[in-house]
Structures are given as C-alpha cells and as structure tokens.
Length: 165
Image (tube, rainbow, N blue to C red; front, side):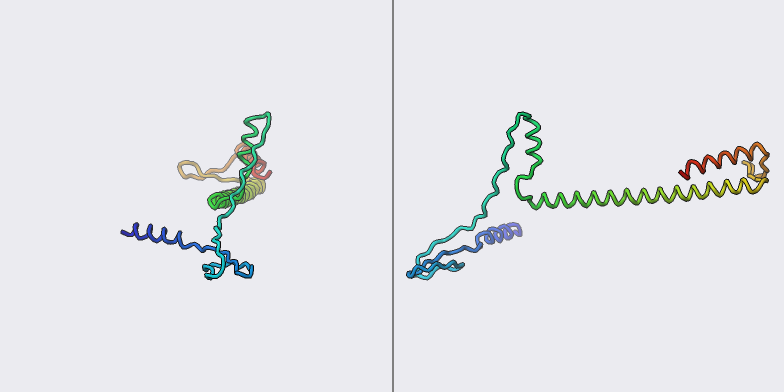
C-alpha cells in the first residue's frame, strides 16, 4: 500500500514542473511568465530542456588500440554525481592510507631509536663493569669469564651498528 502511495506521489511530482509562457501583447511587448497569458495576448509555451553534452570526439590514429585507450581515459563531459562521489571516496581512501603509512613509519622510527638507546646502554654497561652476572636455566646466578664478556661486548657492538644507522 505504501509503495503505491509513494509511486503516485513521485508521478504527481514529475508533472508539477513549472512551465514558462511567452506572452506577446497586442502592442508587441513580449513578457515571459510562469502563469498563462491573458486572453488578449498571443501565448506560446516554452519547453525547458537542458542541452545535452556533445559526445567526445574520437581520436583517429594509426595506433588503433592506443587511441581507444586514450579516448576512454579522456572525460566525456561534466562528471556525474556518482563519478564525483567515487572520486571523493578514492581521495579519502588514499589520504587514509597515507596517514596509516606515516603512522607506521613513525612507530618504526621510535622503535629504532629505543633499540639504539638500549644497545648503547648495554655497551656502556659491559665496558664499565668488568664483572657481569647472568642467570642460567636453573635460576642460578653466574659470572661471565673473559671470553664470554668479549663475546657479549661484540654482540652489543653489532646491535649498536644495526640499530643506530
């Protein structure tokens, strides 16, 4: 029932478009109006049709398919609302992707700086304190001997080189 009511209203709305009347009075004066002309004036009803956009000229070329591809990319007149909406959404998506990419790069930069700082602190710690302690799998503490200390220093230096470029 509602569908029929809505359809009837839509049909009635399309017929209520304003008409333009061209009235020429007996004195030769021309008047344009939305209401019908008086009885003593000559009346003409004007139709208000928007001119259609001219079709895009087709490029004639010896290249064949290349010319068709270029003609397909060229705009054929004013863009429709759907095309404008699609362009807007595409710009929004591109902007969002760029924002996400920038945020990811900033996070990676912060992580690199933090890892660099930690690696440098470990090098300073290993060089300033000759007695280094670690905990084994059993939870017991043990001290590094000279070979283990040298290996830990080398590993810390490599970490600094890799994170602090």
